[in-house]
Amino acid sequence: MNERDGFERRLQEARAKRGLDQPAGSQKGLPAGSWGVGLRAGIEVASALAVGVGVGIGLDRWLGTWPWLFLLFFVAGSVAGVLNVYRMFSPPKRRID
Image (cartoon, rainbow, N blue to C red; front, side, top):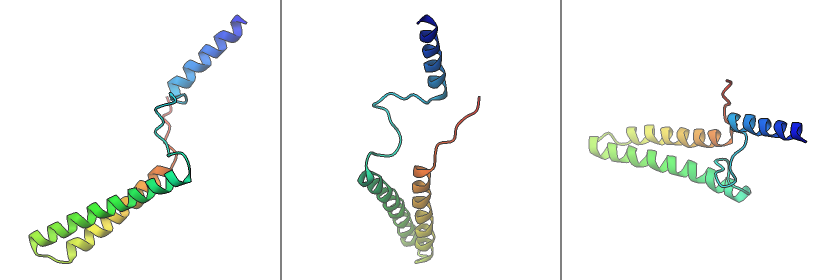
């Protein structure tokens, strides 16, 4: 049994070194359930879009360039929201040591 215990210990050390074993309370992945995933994706898109629109309207009022900066930041916020959702679903890149 000593040989098996040594193997288990080495296996756990290797998995921890690669980051494959995470503590139960510190999951950084997707939320559990389809509602959680959909809600998070919607919030990601809506918040990025709201920030883009807010910055665009604010700059347009300040600089008097209506509607050009609004349109520019609307597109930028939309792209940022879609990229956030893409990053949420893409698998993390693994470092090769």
